[in-house]
Length: 530
Image 1 (cartoon, one colour):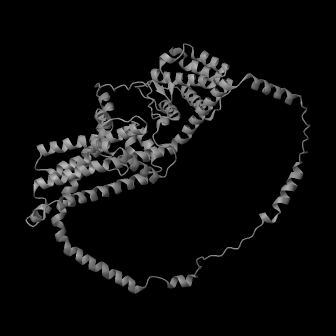
Image 2 (cartoon, rainbow, N blue to C red; image 1 turned 120 degrees about the horizontal axis):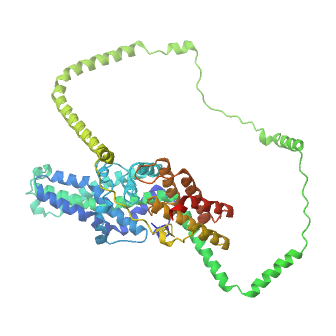
């Protein structure tokens, strides 16, 4: 994910501005997103019609419940288009199973009815965060924009309903008048005719596919707006533009500055050095006693002794005799007792009717409790399956190792791109004055060793601070599978990241002694791994 390739202007937006931006983007890419949503859903509805022709309601309920599965592919397409690499529907369909591989079970069970699903979906699909990392990430993002995401879900749900009613009325308007009088409306409205049900639910499928792009893209733009606010993408882009502009100006100056200009500049420096500077006279300092007297004079001024008269209402304090008179009257107590007696008689009269349907409610509640218990047990078994298999001494399938990235933050992190002696090359570049290249070499060498030696996976969506935070999390919470991180290494990564950010974005280079200290720490941590 390259921020500089962002197709929209990176700026702070109010939540409804982000939703408006999402509506505009959805209108621009609506055709592709509509087809990408409909292609997996339509064959499934056709399969249900072939397998269960007598159950159209269950078939459309299944399609509706699987909406989170169909929503992920359009989200993948709009994320690529927003960052300057759009993909066709045919290419995107090849990623259908890969984008639905992560957290699909939770997305269809516990998180299915979440009102902020469009806002949370990029965290799972694009950031690929799960478990505790996803929970903490959602906690940060939901501090703002979650209310707008909820209202977005409610609004588009009602729009789906209105569109479905409108399409049904449109179909009715196309019926010729001579056939309208012969239609039996009661069985038609009661749903006794199967082909009418299937036609109605097919229209509902088209409505869902038509509204889905607006829901997905608007939630994604809310997510992008929140990340711009948290990570300062607008500031980072401006800094990069300023840096590129400065580099272009420096190159043009090096090419076009003649020797005469340099000579005039040197003469002006010599002439300024020969002119005697006027002697500077400093005003005498005040003694502490004089300073205190000056302060007392200022505090004695009328500005520090303003008196304001404020009027308002307050509750009047009543004496105990008046409070005693305001007790509850006797007639009110008698009236309340009479109401309770009448309600008790009515309840005894209705208790016989309640017994009849009370057993039915009890059976329904019992069924719901059993379903909840089975789902909870299934979720716990799925979440802790590795520990259970390990305790039973079974070997689970090894996790698929994700390929190591070749570039991060515009830096080449391949081992083959590093020199043989990293620290010597860092100090050589520093002495020559190329401070950015010097500290950049040390930073990318650190990232490269963290990826190769410690098996860290730094995705494109992470920032420098988030990469350093991952190192700190493993140091605080080590596991048996991955190589542990020492406190010294964690502290070194935090310090190096802070110095690199200061140099890369604020143009504040560290001191040479600090760079030398960082090189020494790098040799202690990674020198033996070469």
